Length: 427
Image 1 (cartoon, helix red, strand yellow):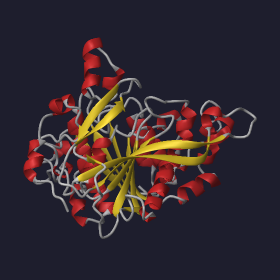
Image 2 (cartoon, rainbow, N blue to C red; image 1 turned 45 degrees about the horizontal axis):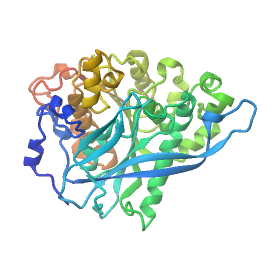
Image 3 (tube, rainbow, N blue to C red; image 1 turned 135 degrees about the vertical axis):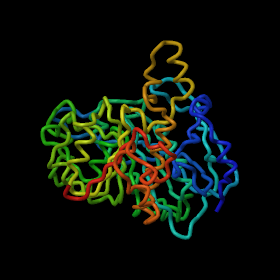
Image 4 (cartoon, rainbow, N blue to C red; image 1 turned 45 degrees about the vertical axis):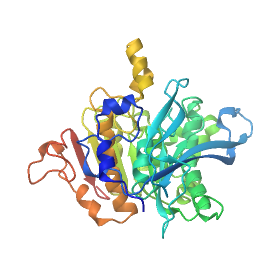
């Protein structure tokens, strides 16, 4: 095992602005909570171009005609523990939110390094971005979790990327299917003696992280069915294609039963305020869930959005981590790249900047806090690590801590502005 030396980690402890200026995805603030720190593995990264064959071509559906099919291309970024003493590489030609500007990001993973094969396969974590987005939007989780002994796969969802964002119906139909496809492919690669992931991936011990529309897909993957009204709404469900995802539909049941994710992290999952979810659909979720969101989420909502979903998923144990006064973009996305910042400085406004930024919360701080809790959550559920429980068994309000009730892993007063709620099955 290649260990990251503490002195190297210390060199990374710089403030968020300098990291953003360097377009880094591996930033660690000096006040980052304990479990945000990278783990003991050095990390490799590779890009895979996959093909999901014979899928419904949603964009080209014609009313009254048979559903067209095509081979759906899906590109993924894969992070994994690696046999290397090197650190650092570039992620080139990464699109910004405008779908035109390409930038280079920098991280700790090393491109195309040999994998460090374990005695037993590593747990798998799949990352699903928002609409629009790309596989690098949450790449800080990819590197961070891989350094802790996971194989992490981040998806470019076709028709939902910055440069190819198409009709919304394609995103709604394909999100859970893409999430299933990646799980199936990772199981196949693990069994393929000629693949670099051979013996590396425990696809039967997998977690899913979804942000916004990725969170919508994650809810379906976890068992939720959409409302019948939405399934029959032509503008989002041409030829009623979303009926296959409706609560109680047999196709939806088969889709859910064919997947074996064990834990879900949903960042600001979309759809509650738009009529996609109701008590019936959400009651079908039986996988452990962690919801992470801001109390001022203007896209997915809070009281009538993510918090309502949290309260209605009564079939499972679940957490809700709330960043007080944070908006939709505060937590999951990487800090705004320099080019996005420059667009804002030059024009006084920029969708490329606001897509990554929050008016209240520093993006790097929010990233580090999310890394801390995701590490504890997946460590508990995917690695059966009992030492992670104290990081989750907390008094709800981070504002109410004192010397005896400080949140484990946080500096004094470091939990201000945070709240962690927990509900058991049936509550």
